[in-house]
Image (tube, rainbow, N blue to C red; front, side):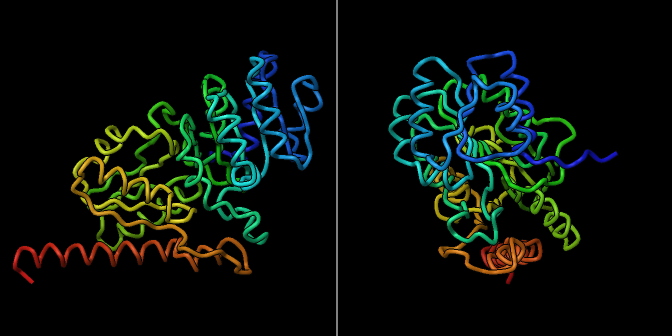
Length: 324
């Protein structure tokens, strides 16, 4: 029987609630009115729950102060308001002091599709991964999100968890090995699609269509964006010569940019195709599917881009061998 869908945020908060019941040092500081999974903290653990209202910068400063007093602090808001709006507080109050504050953001990428650029979050990886001490997590389903609650409780430094807003189909029957930071979901010999968050499901669907076109495409779920165990990740990719990164994020500074850096630093002999949002804001009406279509992040768009890129690679190899 298929597992019921549950939103990442709710899966995480339900798991965290069980931890907070037994650990009075766990504090939740929220800038959002929340949901039943959050209301249980406010109702039953009143001493461990603080609602600051629409005051995200104050929220991060308060969290840093609580952490300095020995508390394990979780802050919660919509993704753009817990990353870009509070960037200086994250940098100075949390990261510079290497404090155990976990920032929980809901509404990754274009999850708040019709709300426009104020609620779109397609730059969070870029701005946060440059901060020393920061860990970034990006689950693809509720099972992984729930497993991240005890993981973040044990984690000693700053952390950001990027939740989708929707209840996405479950990818896993059991949580993947979070210590590894990634999971190989499908083996492939021609190319490997490395995706994160909601795009993992898109990658699996695209890989199936590419298989029908004669292209063997693997899929890797990269659920820890920072730090990345590059040696383990490239070892898992094996001899696959072509890597495709897929993300609901600007191509600049996202996991595609991160892969370009790793390939250069490691002098890896691999081709890289980065699929993400181009250098533009999304004002399209019609919802997330329309934004995806315009950005080439819908399944047909992904398949077309990969198919053409792989064809160019084959032609390039033939030319190099003098057979074209």
